[in-house]
Figure 1 (spheres, rainbow, N blue to C red):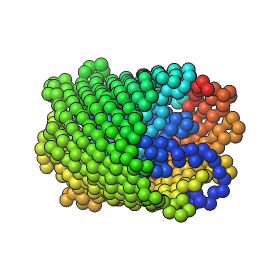
Figure 2: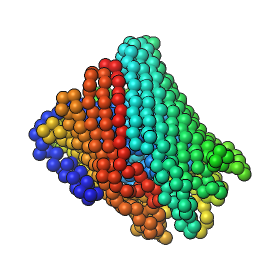
Figure 3: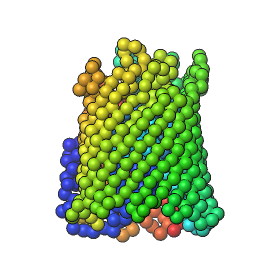
Figure 4: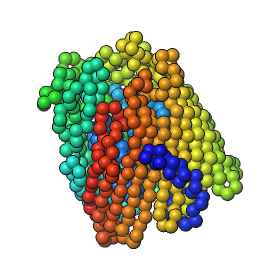
Length: 620
């Protein structure tokens, strides 16, 4: 069934031009504005990077229950989940490592400075307005971490007037959801607040193995219990326009979660209490041809693990950042951007026996970018110089070119360099860290071609990335080391079309992530499926809408030696909704309709067939 999914996704993308129906919503989608790829506002059409936007309508249409579920099967993305809602979810983009993807929330860098990962499972979808996905290196604009790409989450935005909303639902495994929010929007000031509660009893997710394999949850006989999850989150935002051209904004997000899992009764906990917190602010002054933006924020990422109520260990990460950026419109179609970024990372780890000293380092950077139009051609050039307290200077750059051809064809080409500074865990974690590590470095070349019409579109992007000084565990040193090199090649085919009032979109991705180290030369890098595909089909029949999502992923290996195989799979999700009144909607969803048993990480089961019913109210 996986091969069928991939074949249909490819066929959808390449046969889009055969459709004849028209749908104005597709054109609206193409004209959506994105800011992540250039740090300035441009439309999706004008972007020289491979981008995808998932807006609030898409979130509610797909009825995704979590951010990892929303991102599953998207072009270039491999997701690995360790056992359902709230469990550790890691994301690989274009075959790069899971900590090679930079995450931003409302412009603020988030993620753990200790592990290098972002707890995407703890960002509730009910608090999200849209998600921008930029595939390919972006270190020349953002610095460390953006080897594979950048994903930016924008929380709910306040609209005009007073607009309350409520969402409630129940589902399998005693899943419960409740969210509520309200907007107060006026000409010169606005305020909004949202609350989200999610809880589930979960299921028995860990199929772990103890000695001598030590995989999954590290035990031969995991507890035969459910592994539940609960989270409570609040999002606040406010803005003021005191004079024309000047906008002041502030936002905050806090999520407190409790995650149950199976652990070793001697040294690994079975409950994790997590805190994700973000506060940020921005002042934007637009004066004619110049726009100045001063922004800053702080991200807190904490986790406390316990076993039968007894403290086991504690992980704490704090990231503080600020940026000053100027956009200068030197002529029609020509924009020069220059800025200064400042960042301070802190991390701390302690367990029952000892407390590590607080780890800390700062990073300063200057960057510049030029975006210009020359008739049918577009050019983007960027350069950045980072000065890291621990690793010194690092210069990265990017160059992209695009040209519009007849019949709405467009070709693009780009090259970019990127780097990734070692995390605190890789440097200092007991029995693993190596303080002699150096940053990982990469170079990526990309070619793209696409066509965009009113009622259909398609795009094909091919790339090659080479990563030097890849950080892995060195069995000879019993610690992390800059041991490996990697060569990653891949291609992504995306498309959408409207046929007889059915809206269909698809993505098919192929990646060949090869290890180029002496020990495992030509092995596939672990946890990446080489082939993935996603198809979304939706249609409205008056006030009733129906839809389906089919996702397929090929097999992958869960170890660097390529001895532990995790099989491929396909899942089908069905959904329906009924707009009973302008402000009221009933929704129903069945996930994994055929109840397939599958894994994305070895020894961690995924959910079988699940159902969910919900009701939404949103003032018009």
